Amino acid sequence: MPTPFPYCFARMVATMQQRNTFREMNLKRFLDRYSDILLPALLMLLDYAMIVSAERLAYDLRRYWLPNANPDFYIPAVYLSIIVPTIFLCFLKSTDAHMRSTPFWRMAQNVFWAVFYSILTITMLMYFGKVGEVVSRLFVGMTGCFSFLFILTARYLFKQYINRQKLFQVPVLFIGAGRTAKLLLDAFGDDTGFGYRVIGFIEDHPEKSPIAGRVRILGRFSNIERVIQMTGVQNVIVTVPGLSASEQVAMVNRIQPLVKNVSFVPDLIGTPVGALDIETLVDSKLMLLRVRNNLARWYNRLAKRVFDILVSFCGMVFVLPLGIFLAIAIYIDSPGPIVFAHRRIGQHGKEFPCYKFRSMVPDADTALKAYLDAHPEAREEWERDFKLKDDPRVTRVGRILRKTSLDELPQLLNVLKGEMSLVGPRPIVQAEIVKYGDLFHDFCLVPPGITGMWQVNGRSDTTYEERVQMDSWYVRNWSVWIDIVYLLKTFKVVFSGKGAY
Image (spheres, helix red, strand yellow):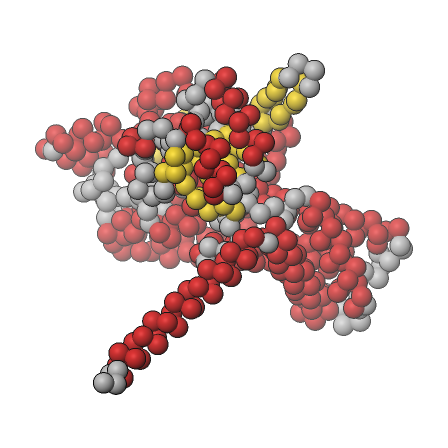
């Protein structure tokens, strides 16, 4: 009896799907196997395309579109296609900007310095080659700015794509499946720069692991060598900071001869690591960790202030029209003052007027007292968090402002006055000082920020104790790059509306 056509067709489709799946698996294995060669090569091609695009845009702007455009401006194609891109690619390579798995902010930092050194080299070549009058300095500057933006944007999108497709990933084995492993696993998932594929964990107490359902438990500490041999993994991360120092050293020594790379998380969680240097004392077999206080250096404080002023002035160009529209909406929804100044604690513990668009009804303090008297459960929430999730004082427009954080736009005036910074600890009121305890000293070292670590890590969904710890961590680990990262992350959090009320 002949086989029915629908059955034959279904089997044919299933076979084709199996073959496609098999091909995809083989392709991924091939890409993973040769990713050490293929990924840097692809990144180099991508960088080359972005550098040439940046040059082309700068060239066209300088020759045709800018107010002082010069139609006679000309650069030979060999410079645009070979010489200048080669300089950029050499510095990108020398600054480790092609590292496979690194935090995206670190990659951005490496790309910035590569572009900076490239522009410096090109400028010197112009000077010594006596072509300064021929090659426009404006063109060189625009090429640098566009190259940095284009390279970062292209890399971000490229890394997002290959991470979603699970391509070019570095297989890694975790030793330990506790809370530290969970934090590290979450960090790998949140940062586009990483490209790790966790093949499994080794844990002596898998039943207590907070991530047992997410990744396979492959064995116990006693059979680490056997698991490494069976999986063929060449990258291991030890996430058991609770072990004694001698036990951690013994574990690293067991693993190191078997793999290419061993990383471990020491029992130093909370220690300032944003400015950490490592010195190896060979004769003594010791490792010396040097932690710098970046904010104790006057030039770093000056850099932070200059960064705040420049970005705030640029932001005012876009904020002013939006601010006028919001002011009209606020007044129509609830007549009264458009902007109010709330007394907050700033740098050195001094009070200052913190400006905000009004998001509450007039006489909000009186309304709050009456509401808390009538709702004891709300009083408990207010005393715990100094916030109400369902605050009855908030107006209709005010809810939108708070959800999008647009109520904080007037704080750009505080930044220009030097009372606040773009990024910093959350500005607090006098009654909150007691909750900071000994960490209030950290809070007073810098101006409070419009945004900061707690705003991009859950905002109002975090506990008060977590906010205090975040403020302290920021101050102890500050760098210009951390400020840039938090500003970029703020846009993402604001658009999602996560934790805002």
